[in-house]
Image (cartoon, rainbow, N blue to C red; front, side, top):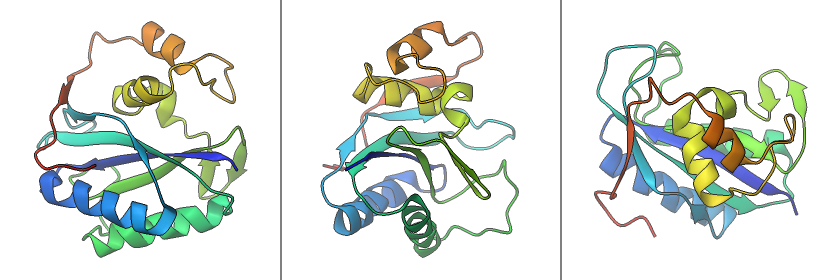
Length: 165
């Protein structure tokens, strides 16, 4: 079964929405591996900081099916699609990796380019699977994180406000 990786973020009541999303994900997909939660400055707009983490699980469901389920979880937690790309949100749950599959079928693109572009995706991914290799670059996530330009990164590992285990 492929290992699935999700990027989870919230900057509107994250202490409520992130644990609730994790419960929903566990109920739907089973056991999860979770990274630490990182507090990250908003990227692309002025707003409150985000709480971000990576969740992983194994599944043989199609990536399109998983993506639809994630969208439903976001919507149940108040996510509205009419908002701008760079804006505050209750919950953002993105499928970023599906095993080693490379997929480019709009709207689903795997692996997501956010992995190598944003510290809030790459650092927690490197935390939980440092020796896994990026399907396109072939580099490990530890190598990618070590080489990442951190000069503009405003991010820190935090203790979750509520227990998410």
